[in-house]
Length: 382
Ligand code: NDP
Ligand code: MG
Image (cartoon, rainbow, N blue to C red):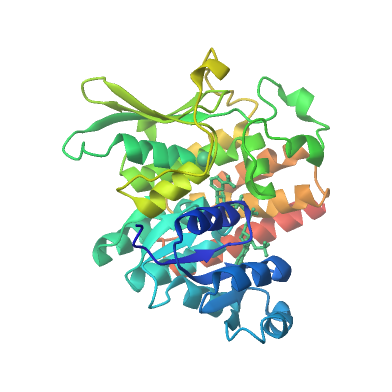
């Protein structure tokens, strides 16, 4: 019997829906749900799981969701205040953060301050506020349990090895839909081609990030914060089959990896049930379906976003926030078909040339975010 009581931020998204599937299978109570604007699905989820509160971030959707749920007694809140309330409900002990984008930072910090353990899918939170989140979690004695498949793999590999030093993290990458292509072949790629990921079915933003390899860059930053390693201890290994979800090399050069079918329900469930394991609603891995597993080095000259993200964590401070915020804005413009694919990498790299912006606080992160978004909008409007 799983003892947790959950709240789920981003419940209508790819990770959110799969988290609810895990909750449904194991009868785990869900006391809070939050989304951006998808009232219809939020209503369905609320009727099924009967939470205490739901948050619809967009304030102009709040009244109609209240009308939809009028007969249920479920409270409806909105905006950042509402999201933070749902993140830190007194009746909950585990907050699943599966919103997309750095909007997840403040609710994460609020949940930690309220003593909640965090199952974290929202990597932008660690990319921008990794130092703040890890410090707050340590002070409060709460756990940050990784949901991202690579980080879950690393986390699983280091269980029981607390006294042993990790030499290196081998972070696997599928390579995305454009693996093997050179810059000139990427010039005219469409939104549809970009959203066709070979192995994983995910939300649109992370699927674009997987195509540019920005996602892998962010995951290197995420690993630095979660596992307390230096950036140079993280090596990206392109592994097209997405069977090995990442590996850890210890001091004696023993390498441990975690394998499984590419299905996020496995890492989602492990973050919820940790340190225990339960049957998971997924397929079993059959290695004979694959026959061969392959490994390659990433092409940093074509996929410059990975290079930019690695440079940002080396530079430290607010550079990862500048890169992340610019990327969020650029991906949005690309999905709206307003800029070509290659512009994402070209403009995001310009963030590394910006002047230093002072110490990392929530306020300075939000300021850097605004600066980066405005810079992108003005560069792309030209
Ligand atoms: P989706 O785009 O599928 O879903 C995003 C969710 O966040 C939706 O529920 C959306 O609501 C909600 N949301 C967005 N903005 C806000 C806001 N301001 N307030 C409240 N809710 C908000 O994304 P994914 O599920 O794919 O990804 C979620 C996070 O998990 C990302 O950070 C991603 O990088 C990470 N991740 C995802 C993986 C995957 O397999 N999908 C794998 C590893 C990490 P609405 O539906 O109303 O728009
Ligand atoms: Mg991942």
